[in-house]
Amino acid sequence: MGCYDCCMRCLGGVPYCSLVATLLCFSGIALFCGCGHQALTETERLIETYFARNLQDYITLAYIIQYFQYVIYGLASFFLLYCIVLLAEGFYTTSVARQTFGEFRSTMCGRCLSSSFIVLTYVLAVLWLLVFAFSALPVYFFYNMDATCHTIDVLTETPASINQLCVDARQYGLLPWNAVPGKACGMTLSNVCKTREYRTTYDLYIAAFAGAGITLLALVHGCVHLAVYQVYQRKLRRRVKEEGAGYDLCGRLQRDRGGVLCSPYPAVTPDAS
Image (tube, rainbow, N blue to C red; front, side, top):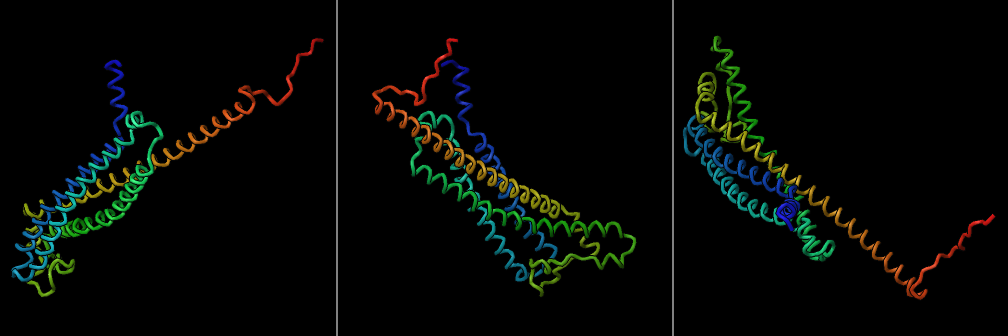
């Protein structure tokens, strides 16, 4: 085998669909976990500095943020293992593996594992859809806050109306209703929007939301690819069985007729006239 043939065989054995899904999943999870973890830390600092003066007002939020950060650690570890298994499953179903172990010699255990992995990927895609929707909530909060700040910058010439424009963190459930001040209004809110902490937190939440979307795309892509390959393999096994049954019938007829098959129709002789 020449170098070109060897390279083409190696390239033909790469599971490109599984590789794309794995890279998307790796990048999406890294973006979601990294940016989400830092965004939660910046959110706690932002609430502590501008929306709450007493520690008891935001202690519950601090515990919730810490809990979500631990969840992010668990998600990063789980999806790291899942991406490795996804890529291994893709390599197992490539042409190189089929040439090594036979085209249709898959065992019942192998088919059961592949089907279970498809079901697991589908369940993860459904659950991650909820995570994707949940990650849009902080983006919505900061978007409303940014829109309010933009309105304040436009109405700087009328201070009376500016003081009526507020963002209340208590309305979003971030702080209890007895928290003081719990909200930022007028020029105070405008100054908050111009701080580095606010811009950094807003950008981090947008990046985490994009990472959740990329991960969801990777899960859907991997689930569809595995399901399509499973259906394709089932059709090929059925066709091989039908061809094998036809060969067995032909061999049986040859044995019954002494090794010679004759046509049941009379031979057509050409007309001499």
